[in-house]
Length: 257
Ligand SMILES: C=C(O[C@@H]1C=C(C(=O)O)C=C[C@H]1O)C(=O)O
Image 1 (cartoon, protein in one colour):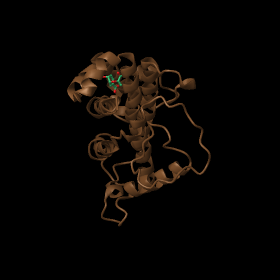
Image 2: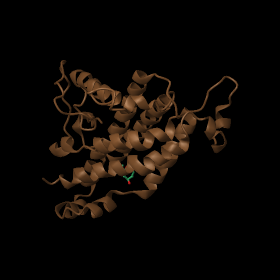
Image 3: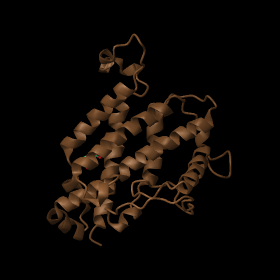
Image 4: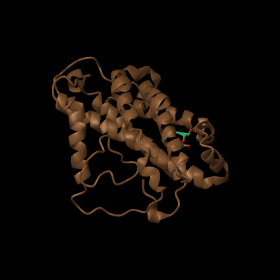
């Protein structure tokens, strides 16, 4: 997330960024759905290095770190130990968050949710042997989910700056429930769920020259979508938004340190 010139971020701008991240998540899931479940890619029995999925993410993150990734607070690696520094110079960016932001990480929860809960919901049973391609697609899904969820750090910062008088007492009291209530906007969450469902319906349709795009934009054709649109609203309802709010709370708890 970029705060142009280091000026103060606004909630509307952060929410626009979250809306853009939805596209990345929907497309990443559509791409992964090209392949069946391919469970051997997730079995730790095959090699000492753990599963192929874990091996791929670890190695990919080393390359990404060398290329200069993971410098931004929302770009959080899944395996942060011993990552190498960037090989090429990276551009400094304005610091808009509290320094503790870099410690806020819910990637363990994202990892478990993705492999245990989400994958079975949007991939077909089966094994086509394309394991390397499969785990590369998983990595794209994990990165997109993690980036969206860790953008919660910016949401929290903006909400705090907009109303420090409301947020400071529960932060000092370490009152997690009060913070959760303060930062929750149910009406916004309802819109987010509807929008991601609609995006899955539009981005996931089969486009042919005979099709009329408008005609496909309805519940009737959900079975033809590359990812069931309802899976997207469920993903956001059960995991993406709750984890984003966990990130917000974690960040706020340290905001006055
Ligand atoms: C991210 C925000 O905080 C909360 C989480 C939301 C989300 O993850 O989409 C939406 C509304 C809020 O309940 C926000 O206010 O925009």
